[in-house]
Length: 132
Image 1: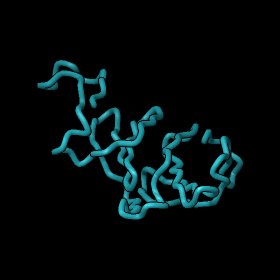
Image 2 (image 1 turned 90 degrees about the horizontal axis):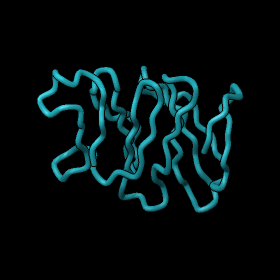
Image 3 (image 1 turned 120 degrees about the vertical axis):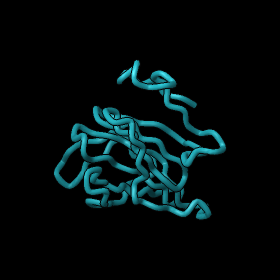
């Protein structure tokens, strides 16, 4: 899998493409991709990474969910209007998910709460909406 980046075309030896999900990469078994104005997010069942668009530096979030755990895994990563916050949706059971609101600058959890597994829309404690 690769992604096109429009930054610094002539400065990069390999052009504007960033490659992921090869057997030698840290990011393997990707389950999805999401983005906001500042980052592209990649995730597998147990980890979330962010690629800063300006610097093209990939960082793994300090969130950890064991991939050996069968019933708990990263389901989705969703962004909102605040480029410094992301919501990580973790499946806990067939009927309930946990939403973790994550501060991208401090790399820490801001808050977490449970939602029904079939919820399509949810809000943080300030009422800011996120699409599920």
